[in-house]
Image (cartoon, rainbow, N blue to C red; front, side, top):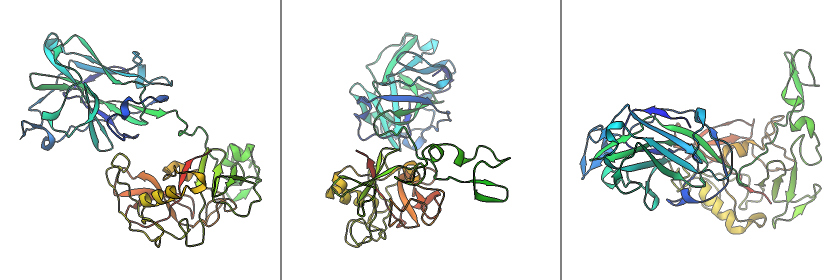
Length: 415
């Protein structure tokens, strides 16, 4: 990422997507790749959370701005032009501070702070730790030392997090903090088995013109239509699912079943690698009529709002919320597995077949699917008391209050 002229003072490193389960997760090793992300202006912490020796201070009293302070982020010691990094396994990130000339030779300590989905972290001598946003508890990356013209600090080695990064670097001298108010931002996508490299097509196999749809392809004057490309065109074989979809039936114990099987409990998506729960109509744990409120107590996953616990209608089969349902299904070892989870919004949309509605899914493999909304694991960023759902009446998605009782279909990485 190229160097940027930065105006201000404290060191704030923002992680606004992926997942931090604890303060040590930043030091775990996993293959990764990085792609650029458009930067946005960082909102400075409000004065109410800036405290020193238990006394609330006004913004700017302990924070300073210096137009001659610069910072940049490097991947394996190379700063990439345009704010992008090459895709490669084991990303090592280094922060580099170009110290203001008047501060060179002065004693100071380096600061690095991060926020991730509402939680704050600071880089210390012991690694990443939670931070309470109080200035008197803000630890430094190293011990005070004489500032050189350029100061380097490790951000992460073999970075594990998937998500958006906004990096702020700075130093503290005589109680005054210089930091990069304008963030240096990029996105990291972990290249692990949980990142899907293939996606389903839409299920649309017919073309349209100005006068109608469900027409043969191609249509003169209406080129490059959905049905003319992708798996629905190249792998249009209904023997294992409609058009370009490819599914395998799985038994309740995890055994692979033939397409002709009349009873099955899960479906393996052979394109994406995901395995999906199949709903039942027996008033049991997986019944199609049960509804659940959105609930996730882990602040690293809930977008800042846990939702509503046990507010759905599922008889006595489980706690009637998404968190309780996941726990109940995993306790049974459904289809021989205990790593079931809520699907991400994009994953859930991946089984929508847009050539049909009510329900918008291949019912040969997914019977007992209600023509209603199903919860995803994704919070609605603009209004965190809501979560994203996918409507299987017509295949679209939208936000629902987390207190709403709607359907759930769980997923896991297949095999």
